[in-house]
Image 1 (tube, rainbow, N blue to C red):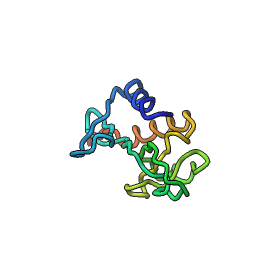
Image 2: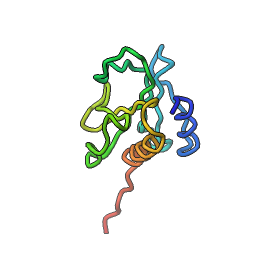
Image 3: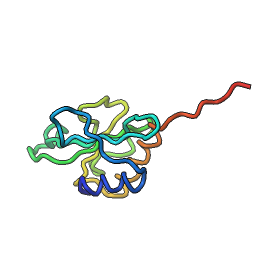
Image 4: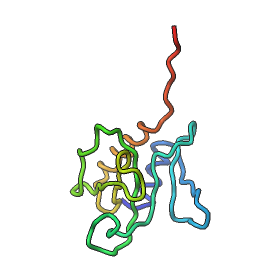
Length: 124
């Protein structure tokens, strides 16, 4: 999946557009919920070497937040690695050129659900 295909998927599925919150960095994009403004995805350009791969190729990577019970369900064969530059207990990195499209869609949806606003229960 290309970066632009990822952006289009987020727009079509969640009605969200990329946000560029970092001064002087117009490549790193975050995707936020419209109600609570929490990030559900961050897209960055990262060297494969920073993910433990023996290559200096720079690729598009998306970091996604997952529920802890999902960790260990995906791995390098799926293009999924421990998060680059984020808390590895809660986030993963998905290599967009390597991960199958259905895996990307599934994981983005899981991240979107994990970061959406919680509905508060009223006390009776």
